[in-house]
Image (tube, rainbow, N blue to C red):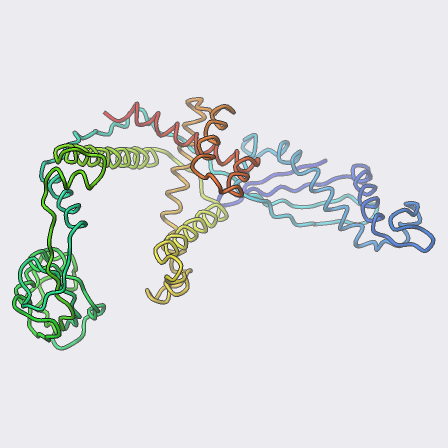
Length: 439
């Protein structure tokens, strides 16, 4: 078997393979045996006629096609193992399935075919051990605890329809139509907007005063000056005209913050116990955010310090496909059963899937670089995952996904085990990096 290899742009390798007539003989025989099984000959049961007799009933083109298929399938692993790049690099690392082109196949002739194969880009790691990322002291202010407590208090409120004029602390439901210079604002037509009078500082700062004393069913028009630093840039600093209709007014009664309130919130005896739990939860959340920040900062510096070969298009396209699927799943989760489908979502934002694919390309490349860098560190630091660790992870998943047998069966397949091994390797590498680089 002759193998000639050359490197193409974007980290793709081209492998020309030639097998002699003698090397092809066993594959010709296997192809003939395979096709003979489906040949029907008078006087013989299907597939039971002598091979040489069956040969007369088999189309030559089909025999050549089957011979090529069997040859490539059986010789491919050996070809990849033997192929060498011109620079002497060993052990080709495919990044995706090969593209096969048959160059020549004919009776009593050598078989020549071409394999075009994307390779996983090589990574030259920088001096990642010099990366230093600072940890921050985790502090939860009493104000944060009080705010969380107020949210709990609000969630347990009692509301009653009010027939009186609206006052501070009431919740109103109001239709809003917003204009600038008599031109409707995009997205400024809002039905049954819920507003707590006196607590409107983020969305509609200072607007509550316009509804004080208003009654249900009343229509009000007024102008409102938005602050220059408002989060919505199209409204910031603008004088906005409002046309409104109050639909409903509700008196809000909040429960008293005391030990009884705490007891109604869970397994607590006193309000102080509830506050302690809230503080602990907030600290845990801050710790989770810090771990996420440390990971992102370390991985960003890691990829910046490392050099990567060109990315094959198949690898980039595969990553973009994953990101598109993640977006679709996110849209479907947000909409639930009756929510917008992905095509409806695209129409609503006036974008196409191709628009997203183009936008996702830079991020896809960064994701691939991060994965490659993590993989390289695992190899350099000899970070491995044992079969026992995979089994332990599968036991955990069996509890998490109890009843979802189809998913659990997937984790037991070879592909599922490879997925778990990669996942656990990534986790172990990231832990290693944070343990050694975060100070």
